[in-house]
Amino acid sequence: MKLLLVGQADSIFFEHYTKALKRKDQSIQIDVFSVDAINGKYDLSACDSVVINTWGKSIFRKVRYVRILLAPFCTRVSLHKYLKSQNKQYDVIHFKWLIPGVVLCPKLYLRYTKHIVATFWGQEADAHKLLYSSALYKRILISFLDYASGQIGSGNSKLVIQNRSKFYYGIYASSVLEHLHRLREKETKNSCKEEVGVSKHKISIAIGYSGKSLHRHAEILIALLDNEEFRKHLDKFCIVLQMNYGCSEVYAERIENLIKGFGIEYVLIRPSKLSDLEIAKLRIATDIMIQLSTSDGRSSSIIEALVAGTIMISGSWLPYAEFKEMGAHFYELDCIDDTLPELVLRLSDNFETESKKCQANIDVIPSPTWDSVITNWIDAYRAIMAK
Image 1 (cartoon, rainbow, N blue to C red):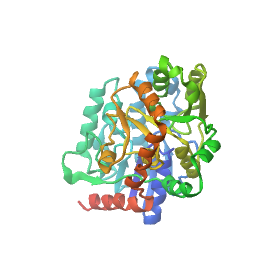
Image 2: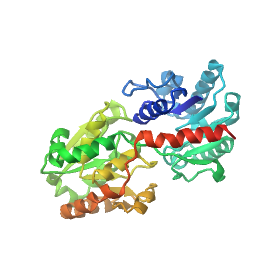
Image 3: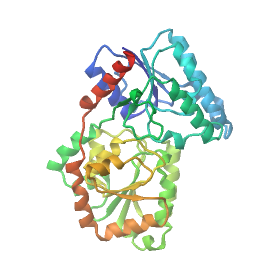
Image 4: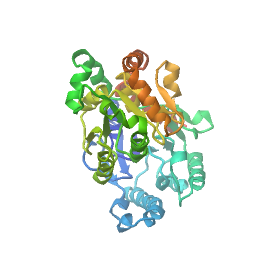
């Protein structure tokens, strides 16, 4: 099988996904077109070839407003040039991040493959724009999906292909979960807090699970720290900002400068690669996770947090109904306003009780391994190719 993956390759998910594919079937040839720069933080050695979008080196990338207009078209041209240069027919071109730059002109992809496959990372239909228009992007995306031979994912997207015969179930796993289960047998929450840098006397509050701006770090910090009642209790809390991937040093510095002005204790994990063991310790060290990002898929990071017994505050717009159906206990908010600090204070006043409720999530949330979930993806590829 000749497979081309198109997406954000500088990611722990690409690393584990490609390694799991190769472990399952050595004959799969994996080429990657990364829409963003690759900083060498993740091991992509399972891939036969990795090429980066030339837009990353364009002088126009630094020009405000112009870059927003040009980025999708330059990305599309870069991808087309790459496909043309390969001079090969792929069995499947799998788009793992449906940004505007890759969904343009889908018919042209059929020169290089018979089978286009789509996977929604989160709620792209609501998060992206083309030429400043979300409606235009959505129309282009729907046209792209019409050309797709199949869609693989959890089914949480609003734009799951209507023809159910085109849909195949596939989820990501987490190698962190294995460490979580082992750590619970030999580590305490306080020992993990100590390694992360959080005082055992503080309630740790994580904002999202990465440094991507979609986690709305600044908006959430302002909602918490501008609240008069919350400011009376700053000594109870430590804010954890996990900026280890998905952001630049500039963004991390901007968020740090913001929180510095409020006088609350915080830990900021700067852009770098954390090992699976370090992430597992971070999850155990987190008492409360505020997950009010603009969009999210069936994130492994959320599963990790729930399995770690973290008290979760999520957005009601996020696709976590599946976890409720499993019997998981977590809280939801409709927006970011004063209801957020009010809820955090209420949870902190009853912290032991709330923590015990969330510890029960460990028993209801499954912990799939990469080797177990990758079979679904390979089976989906083969079923699509057989059509």
